[in-house]
Length: 438
Image (cartoon, rainbow, N blue to C red):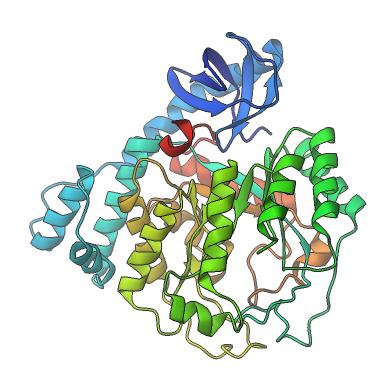
């Protein structure tokens, strides 16, 4: 199946194309193709991924057209705000009314939302965030695949199961040919148009080797490549961009330098931030965020984390719960509640209503089996499916009992698409943030 519905090019503005989706117009950056008005294209993350033959595009659009508007109706119904709940918190109503008008909230108002503990009040917060998601992003939902190519890591992070602390972990490193074959299969057999290549900070791969792998993948299939290899050096970012990578997933994990230093011995937050800033300056789509529930973290820290993600030019927000691995120094630390994670997603939507794509992380799905649906109904609009070969998945043990460790790719796709349809979401992914669009 196709995770990005083809759109017809309506206008060309320098390197950008204006694309029509059943009457909706969105922009995408074209770097690699000779495109004319009237052509059909698919895009991911605001980048044109491929041209689509007219007859093929019309066949897909014909099959999708009726369903597309049916899904919009479902989404509108589910995102509609209820009115007249006299028993609800009056202060909460006033704060959310401001948010719904896209009036920036003060920090004390955001903290009030994050402190909510009444289930009814939390649901009102989630519905408000979902309303804003629908208002600015309609019913589009990004679906990306992730390939975990190696669980080697040189770092000593005090919570991560693939860090040097975990002496009992069996290590693996996929060969270049296997990475390429897995990527090609994900695109050609399963229809993915965006793939995250992820590993620990593995010295077993040189930047040049990774660049060659990306180049080969791009030669074989049209796909948006997102890199997630930790800190590979500023020069390394340039090499991988030149090879064809166009997105980077790199969490800063906390905006609090003291907390960062405690959980990352020998590392500095500024180094992490410099990598993200450099990636943004090169033109990478930025996916970043933080961990929720870190030792010593305050609610104010969480608010600051969201603001930092926005300041860094995040196109995609990745905020997931802190799930320490038992074989690490922080292994016995208490994990956060599902409610705190969902409230954080909702606040991310409120703080960056118009631009943010917000991911339902695998960590949140691990924390709660219903998290995918609950996250999408709390303002999120992005999912990630695991296309790592099954024999490796359980070994990429950044935290215990990771969701989707055993499910076949076909099963993951079927379940994700079924959920999206039940919520009225369409698997489209076009549009760039204003900071990129200029």
